[in-house]
Length: 177
Image (cartoon, rainbow, N blue to C red):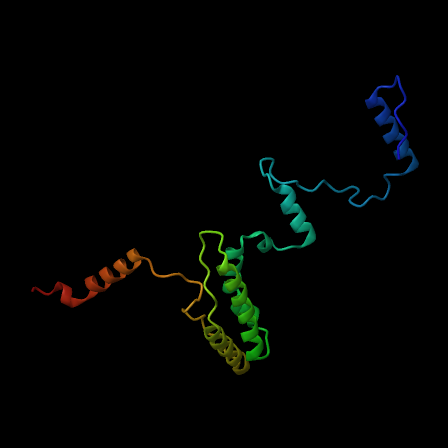
């Protein structure tokens, strides 16, 4: 612990003297980062710069900061990548079941405007099998299936636009009635 400031000495002078004496003793020699520029502390108006630096320093993913429904949606999106390296269908189904259990736990007491649907184990297993067969045959894997369990219902205006495109493209529409 540092000595107390003697009376009659200016505080700034006393601190400067302690720093100079420590430098003379070599207390600041061989410090990590010596001779390197200070790391950027983030934008001055960024209120969470310290959180971002902490996460980067600790190697933690920012997914942990997401609200539960968004984190679950992201896990459902990444499910094909997650199960790709698994060896058995049973292991794939266990991973999907665990994720669906987490979704069910959240659905019991939802706390936000986001909807989360359970993952479809059969479609995930089907995609996993197709990727495994393609890998063993040496063929490039097929595109992911369109029955994405996290995709929401089609909006009314999307259905209307599709209907209009179909009706405009058909020759029946151009024929006189």
